Length: 75
Length: 189
Image 1 (cartoon, chains in turn green, yellow):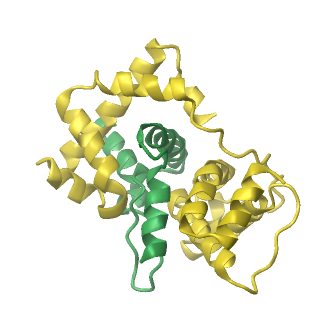
Image 2 (spheres, helix red, strand yellow):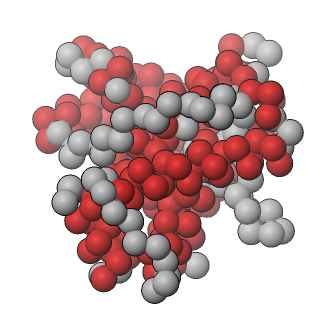
């Protein structure tokens, strides 16, 4: 895997969007399964960083995680 | 009663707006507490499931009453870790789980957004080149609800190019912030 390919896989996992399976459970992005345990720690670090950036950019001060959960709650 | 407790109580008697505020304060400590589980589960999914279940708990008239300082946050962290363990077993990733007796993490709520930092970010966004900025904004506007593929289509990019542009935008944003004396470590501390 080239560094660019690795970056793309990590970034795909950083997103807050999660599809649901037939039982309504959230599923990890397909790219998540292609990353080594060490790179999954990097995904976590970037998620923390990204959610904070989103919170600071968003006029309402909310991150993509809150947006996704609100949408789920409201159906 | 802490600020977190006040918001949680307000959400019990109020509604979604109060719960949204509560989530804004607790999601980061919940996510950080799941760092030891990041090699075995999709932490983003666990955080979202935890917050959704906290809403269900909150709206249950017979749901348990949480007591003690930052009780709702402490409860949510325990719930999140249990969900993570179950998810790891479901996915056959137990080998990467941390020990069961993992010490409790300090439960400090997320600080309120610093207005100076917010201004610095806005100034740095203005310096991000056009296509990476379009990708970043599309993800912010559509990504959480519709996914990256839809966000990429909205700015006429392939998914791969879109993700590369998001990476580029974030790197440039962080580089600019560093130039203003705000290292990336400040955002993840």
